[in-house]
Image (cartoon, rainbow over all chains, first blue to last red):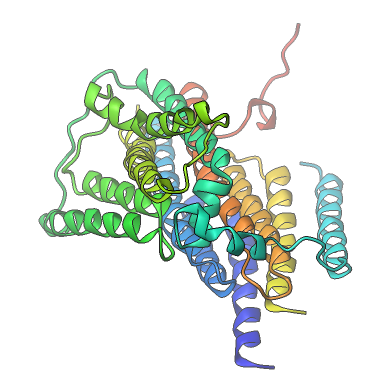
Length: 86
Length: 220
Length: 106
């Protein structure tokens, strides 16, 4: 097992684990944070596949901007829940 | 959801993954190899980086329509969030450390965006990455309380949003007298691609930032 | 088996995980997360299979770049629609998924 293969297997395991946990964890905020982690790991995967353009775009757009949009939505959800409880 | 239905869907999805995996392991050899064809025509495309050449020259229609799709999504988000707050929310200033950091970083991010735009012709980079960095600068300024949210975009902002698509359309239509849409004359291809990418960077940056800013203050 | 083929197989697994999440989760934000994971799996398959003999292929890479931008556009619009639903009904779930909803008599 070469170091590159070991790294690839670890990265794929981390990708699958973070994706599964993002969809099954109970707290929505934690799910969004896990999704951002998934996006950053995807950027690493793109770099391993020899696609630096996609790695740049995935880190900035896929993890960064999508993460910001989702966190804003989670904040809106929490504000609405607090307002409905009153 | 009923337990047996959940189990059935999980089983079918696992079956799908296994079937896809089996199909991937038994694929035949390549018939057409595109990297060779791209490299053979790279000199005539106007840029030196193959991905940029494919994105803006060989498959330019995809990029043109993609920018239109991005603009349509922004129109949808603006239409939905407009009724929630009819007036612009002034941004609440945040912690002074965050403000100072944002003021230091925003000009650097604009510089990085300009660099990514320029280097896209020779190395990994290009309009989408540069536009994403510009949008991130916009989001950072918003989080630091230095930019207001968008309720009613002004004329200048609307002009910037459509500029990329209009420049790309103008370049595409300008080739029509030669008989083809989106035809770059080989001598001008590099300059035209840079012009189109510059417009795209501005528009993509404003559109992606707008997707965040148009819904940033949407709380009832 | 090259490294790219390994990533293509991982993409197939991600596709299945995203599809299961999209179908099974009633919460709209989780459906949007699942849709994004679905898209990422499809992109890995596209690039991984195109490069399975080791040579970097710019055509699927350009397509995936386009796909990432379209995915965030769709996500932003979906989030706006979900937030509109939240404002109107107070729930981040579609009406028939709520267990206490009364069936309409028409």
